[in-house]
Length: 118
Image (cartoon, rainbow, N blue to C red; front, side, top):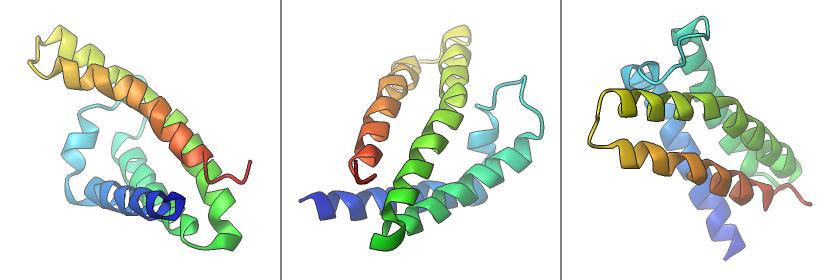
């Protein structure tokens, strides 16, 4: 069952990372205003998601890939906070979804941690 979870996680990160290139506007909209180079950071984070997901597929690089995904999830957390703030300020009816993403980030970190070898 753990192997199935690994492959599901890898597929999800490849899919989401690819979306950074296909639909960058969605990711640009949640970038915190205090960060520079929004477009470059969106593309870089997408590239990282795809690359780190691919590292999960090989036993020799699995632990490194899992740790890098954890670091990436921590790095993009401010964008999730920004999304929740924006949705709150704009009375967006999907505020509940933005708020749900915040604890989900911790679940994703735990999921990746399972493959760190620790």
